Every structure is written in C-alpha cells, then in structure tokens.
Image (cartoon, rainbow, N blue to C red; front, side, top):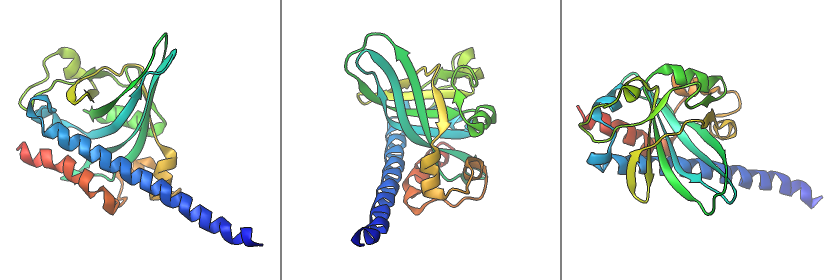
Length: 222
C-alpha cells in the first residue's frame, strides 16, 4: 500500500515544478522589458507606450527547425487598469511554415496592443495576427513617432531582439492564444482570462518585477 502515500507526494512535486516554470517565465519577461527600456535608441517610443492598451512579452520565441520551420513561444501579457496594470495572463504564440530550413534561433518578442479589438478576439480563444488583428513592425527610438500609415493603423506593434539587438518584426500569420493550462495552474480553474486582464484578480507576489518593468517606463516617460 506504499504507493498510495506516494501519489499525493508526486502530485505536489509536479505542481511545484509547474508553478516554478510560470514564475521563471514572468521573471524572463521582466528581464526582456528592462533590457528594452535600457536601450533608448531601440525602445518603444514613449508616446506609443503611453497609448498602449496591453503589452505582451514572449521570451525566447523559438524559430526554425529542420525541413519544417515554425515559431513557438510562451509568455505573459498585462493590460492597463486605471493607473496601473493587470495581473499577468499567460499566453502562447504559434506560427508554422514549410520549406527547407536547418538549425534555428530564439528571439525575445514584445507585443504592444494599441486597442482592445485584438485583445477581445484573443480572449474569445485566439487571434491570428494579420487576419483577426492588424499588425506591423513597431518603430523604435524612445522619442520617435510612428512613421508609416501601416504602423499608425496597426492594432499590434511588434518588437523582437535577436543577438542582443531590438528591432521591429513582422508576425503576420502567427496565432496568439491564452495559455490555458498555465493560467489554471497559477490562478485556479474557475478564473477566466477576462478576469485576469480586466477583473480584480490579484497579481502573484513573484510577478512584482514584471509589474515594475511595465510601470517604470510609464513613469519615466512623463
């Protein structure tokens, strides 16, 4: 009957490992934002950051594979809530492609949502970038302004960092969706994604660094 005692122990260890993964994801997302803000000539323009409705960060988005290419990554997202930001919602991005590819790389990705339309579609299940929500590579430079008509009208502005350099990037065709399992692990099965971003869900204590990285630029750019 010893195995009966082992079941809850194994479950507890598994759950702890899962929460550690989510905590690590939030920490990595905070680091990406801190480093983005630390490079003024490649940062999101201050006026666009102040107008942003939500911000998503996907650290180490995986790109490329042998023969069948694609992109896949997991990150977090937060939306403005009064003078602050909501608890982070976990999300995932998937983008498939075909053709000969060898090797691969990873990039850090920052998504700046300029209105709620794309966010609403994401909350309903998923949003296909370029089809359900217009997107454009974001302009860079702390004091820069959106230079093109496409950037001015885009619902999502995207930024990526590869080999230490931030730049605008196109993600047309990518599928962005809530990471349901991670959200359940952290907030509970009864909490809806809408409640996390627009409700009164409490921010986990270990997400403080990420929340500070969201607020820091807002305060510093005024």
